[in-house]
Image: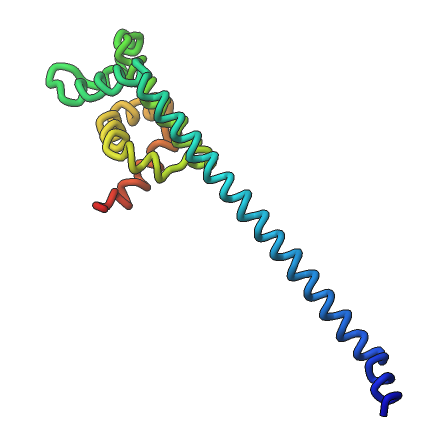
Length: 176
């Protein structure tokens, strides 16, 4: 009986089963380690995005040109005597400080939208903190953007900003 039991445990079949169990355990350990590593990398990426976004927002608060640009866009939108489109089409107004301020704001948010699409900035934080400002700026400057596109013969001018604003408007902020 002892020799039958010895033969059974020393058989190729049993050794193969034991080896298979070891391979499965090793693969499971590798998979678990890989998942843990990927989770750590993902968490680090999220923290880096959030940090970069916070730094951007902090530095933007001190940007006098950005604040002046917001004010100019808002004033031109509300003004009956001046037209934001003229700052894209009229040669004299294209060379003005107001044109520079409008472009500064739009270029600022276009760069941010590009960084959002490349996952450099955290879109959720930006949306939560800047939704009204960004949507209003885009809507108020939309005639200016359309005029620039028409003059240049391309629809790509400020396209990433437009895409981001559309995405935000499709899923507006919800009351918490």
